[in-house]
Image 1 (cartoon, rainbow, N blue to C red):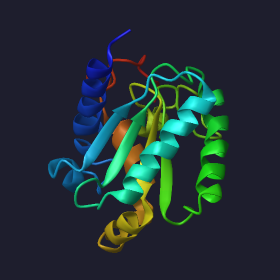
Image 2: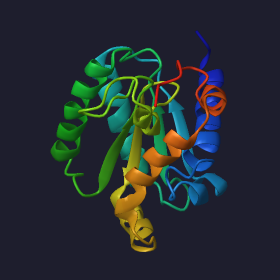
Image 3: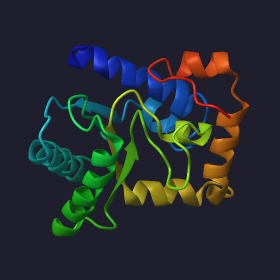
Length: 186
């Protein structure tokens, strides 16, 4: 398996080429360009250690001005190989936010190599919108997200637009952008 630097580079490339390059998240370009996005690779494989790493990164976000650190992508390459385990763990992250009084302050977005939306077949191309090279917990500031949404026309159309973008990719484009996945069907 790759070392942490190689993993961080893969995630950086995914953010640049997929998330920003395909405009899946219209809010990502500015903080990425301003170098306010932290990619934290956590070697932990145990649930408790991953939860502690999330707590530590959220505490760091709370203590750091958004101008210096807007958001963190917490990458866990040694944990949650199974998407169902990852998806169930998200309940623990929600409990963590509640327990710390951070509901409404932070939000955790989820990305996984086998991400599958409820009601979608695993090979449905729409799942690509949330498929990443490794399991990732994206730690977001709610206030920043609200400001970004307020400045965006029709933000509720983002998911459907993203799915349409995934469907419009050719098989070659999918293989290039998602080399760590088998090509999903249309």
